[in-house]
Length: 460
Image (cartoon, helix red, strand yellow):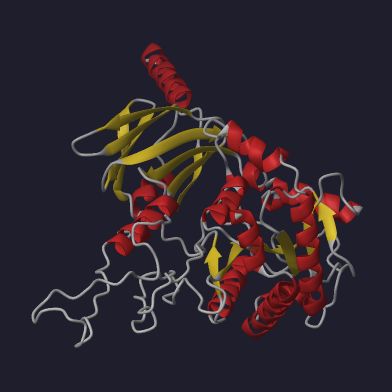
């Protein structure tokens, strides 16, 4: 009897040891960040995750095997986080594949690119395993190709010949040239000229060149729309600073960025483009690349600062510095903002070294000078809405401002760590005032620094 009981206890102990050996790691969180540009699945765990990814066809799906973990309720809820509107994922199925191995099957809506990588603990996060799912073609390039195709498919402008032209009755009408070559790249910042012809005033050119705002991408006065890239700081896995009452910087910056785009789009000669228009993470270098693909004239990054002292308050404007920070606080802030890639999670295996060199090493003296002019104009108008933290534009090595050819500023709208300023930042009316002040500064800058002149010099 005693021997039988002892045998049972030993068996149970061995079984528990075996189970604990298989489930040596625990998945503490499972998150999904869907966006048009890519969808991210992130698994957070107490220890580094052992994994294997299998890519299958017919139908398209990704199979992720996670070793030494238990199928917990956290993993089971992953399938519930997939939206029907997700552009890439049809559904996710999670189940035990074999003892100690959980299989996550990602059923896809079509062929995709994927990137799976592990991240060490950073910020408030433990170990993470990140699966990014991208379209086969870059989202921006697909959008530009779509515009080009739409422009090339436009019908030619046709006008009948004058009655006394000498042409026979029923003759085919002469085709007049349009205002832009329909086979040329149709980007919103391309400058075009009407062909010299006696008949060009008789026919209005077709409105074939539209921006995503729905208005013509060619301005009648100066031949082009001024393009402002608006960067909502942080997003997705990177929440940014946390307010005294729990607000997340990423939500406030997106709300202000959307309002700024709306106000810019209402201007007759401007359009705004967002680096992100949802709650998802974008690496710092990608934000710069997106602005350059849109041929942006300016880059404005929106943030809401936090400091250890809740009494800290006021708005600030920053530009890039090639040498060093202009103050200890500027250096501290740049270090914090540059850690976004570490917190948000960036794979180091897919970076183009040529791109990195271009963004980080090119001489940017002229661009920095323009950035300081822009920052000064914006700071002056923000000072009419909110107390200024510093009376001048500060400089530091912000990675997001390192475009070699686009004047770029970072606007710290206020201190989210200050309870009073956090309340204002969440107030729609105050957001409108901030947006109006930023736009006024932008318009003031362009009053003495025309964007068109810069383009003409570049083209020559």
